[in-house]
Length: 284
Image (cartoon, rainbow, N blue to C red; front, side, top):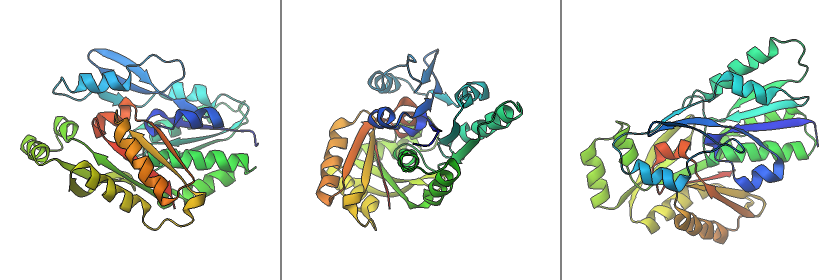
């Protein structure tokens, strides 16, 4: 395996199973909530659990504040003899991409460092970003150089099929993006929003009444145009919705995908999706 360190950020929700398998480093994101500051995603960092987080958010009328790490925190990740590839949440959705580039420039001012730093804007988030991090890890295992990995990962950004379900519009209402009356109507009618995560945006693309129909719609969208499914893996991230994620996993299994990874969505992405959401991603 090449001498390459791969980093992502906490908003990627990279599955813990894959963090351990590929030795991926995660730079934490800052979460300010109920008068407390947390660093979410760092190894050994103390943070509110996802379950407790969603329970507390439901009781308040505002959203927690999230922030990218400081350049200094990211620079500490760059301090290694290895070349570094950091893959971040979409630059238009968070400051983390810009901060990682700022940290790179600051780090490279010290000419004593000989390792190279590569910063990739995933243009997506959560499970979509996870797929690109996973691809980078697999390419590293196949002996690709850092420059080759960056080229291939960037060429595959548009090949990430990433869709999800929002159970509730509560967080969109708290964030001022949706009028309260719209959210009440959606709840009464059991309407769930179907979103596409990619091209540096989260865009509503459909809606559905009831869970099963919503799952079917997401499955059809994320699965569309995927060939050689027996060689492809899917990633599901859920916001305290393990049962819904399990249903989607079974649907993907029926489609013939090689392996389906399921993990919890952290408070960073969960702040914006709301509890009950799931995000599914596959690379075409």
